[in-house]
Picture: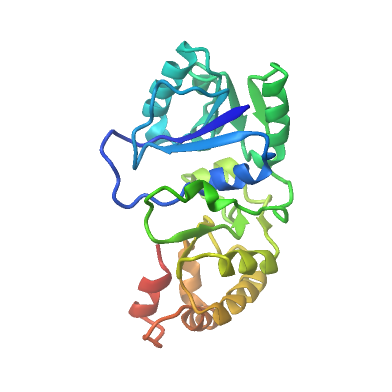
Length: 268
């Protein structure tokens, strides 16, 4: 069996700052060695429409949906089943199903093995619904999928999912709610960072600061790693001086002042 991962772009113009699509490294890790896997990233390379594969899996955002649907229509016309996941199919599964054979609503890791079994048995369902409450303790991205790709020199790592706030405009709250917040074991994240070749890490959490106590412990664990790192955060930490000082200590830099220089180092 062969699976083709595709990360669609917003247009056909190459992106100079494309970063590794971490979701595919996570899913790749669950697959047995008997399954062949390939990745095409539309941001940095041409996606061939004459693929020979048993399944195309796409992660789709609203701004890439139109192009993703075009790819999917082309593959399905050749009899290749397509499954879509991500924010846009989660919010509009019926729309996505006009172009895909199956849609994942919510997270995909807890459903991935079932999906593969259904593909093998020819019993792919239209919708796979995650409850988004599975443990993150098993995450171990297999980045060998990116070896031949030319991505920006920054490594993506995930520590937590969800946000404690319920902002009505935010896709994160719509996707996860604000009760189902999960964090990985700190030792697992540290081990992952230590295994990376790059010295600049982007923590991709939608809001790293969802739990002050555990986040402080996590940031303390970053200090011995001597790395530069970035993250996304809610603005309320600007009033937490202890947190700001700890952030300043945790990133490798010649600057040692809490202020504008520090903020530019860890802000997205």
